[in-house]
Length: 286
Length: 348
Image (cartoon, rainbow over all chains, first blue to last red; front, side, top):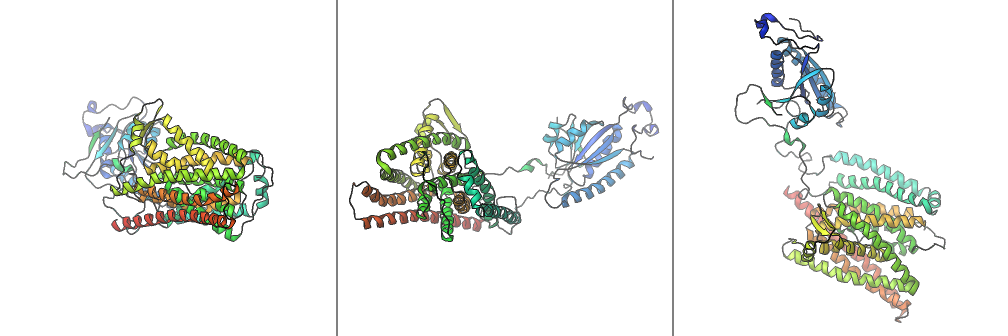
């Protein structure tokens, strides 16, 4: 059967299900209920797709698949966003293909920003979202705190999709040289030049205009704020310059006494080690 | 110090030698400051004056350079989790009051005994404080090192913390709870000393360690916040009278911001007692330096009648010893920093 891409009514092939009464009645309103399926990866995991399609098929709902780019400002010249978009295209094609086999209507959208906010916003649009399914890599608490409908996650034993693999072993980026900050040496050198230039500029401005400076500074009174402001401005740029200078040279605080950094991805669920029933399952958390 | 300025203030022309000299002095001062929380500034005033800067301009410019340096140092050490902001700000406020009191006291002495009397008073306080407090700190450093580097906390401070006098204040980062009535005198003394010899931290940091009970790392880091508050307040007053020489300040800042970052980094590598060691060393050597400066003022007040040549030599020795004190402190800091760092990297 042809799949409508924008139809408002679910397709109920009564012949397929035999007794017409056993089929759940179409929703009273004109609106199709949707299942919101959210992933933060470029490729949505196939078990998630399949589970969503199965449920949507049984309940006669449609699917709204959202690929959320949670790092839209990632500083790599847009490379990540481009890869994300490409992966999303592939994933959408696959999803549509699978859904088409079961006559489930699926729509795709790409979003950027925080998952919780995206879910909250989408649930309040004109579409009627009945519940949410989240892919691995999304924090359950973040979504449940923002979603007005139930949220399910799918546990499957396949390796995680997308680029979000967790490093289980220490991988020195700088060839064994540990660095405390997450910024790379290149970033520090760049900052060095940027702030060094700004500092040099400010110093030059002050020293090449001694007459102006003297008249302002020796005035006293309210002009007292001028030296303070100048000094604070210089401290800001020069402070950053000296900071990046030492960091670029690799002279940074001790790792041993460094306060523990909170690992943001603490809550990602790892794949289960024990071999269990591998059919996709929903996990209800209210 | 707060009276009307009658004479024309000449902001000096800076030669290349002077620029390099001030930059280096700034660097060393910043290094020491970043590490022990204070103490870099006091050598700058004599250094500037030796270049021909008028006394009041030297003091004003010193203050103007102190607060941004303390700010940068405090921010850096805050990132290492060593600064207790609440403690710093509360004490900073009272220290500022102490500065005003100290200034009034200075003025009174100046009026009563003139410039030489004022200088004598300053040097006398210098020697007294530095010898007494310096010895306490040094002895503590030695005993802590001997006992394997474990700081059990000052017993006096523990007793004081137990005294319940409303209002009781709790400080999370410094990890202590103490009555405000014990914070105030330490802060006031810090401010008064800052107004007198330009270094409040020589009472502030030991006060924080031994009376209030903070660790040496937290005490020296929090002192930077106090120094910032005092420096900012003082600078606003000086700038109001138009006494701040910005180019001078910028040159010193050029060096000191490098140094203060390095000093702050150093504190993450060394054991607690090292801070006490450096502090005690500097204080004791500077005490010797000031001791040599006293004859000059005694002569001026005609209390003694030493040969002029001898006095001149002693004054030179005084300055040299002061520089030596700072250089020693800086060397200890740099050596410990790089030694601990290479150790850490060898193990990693």
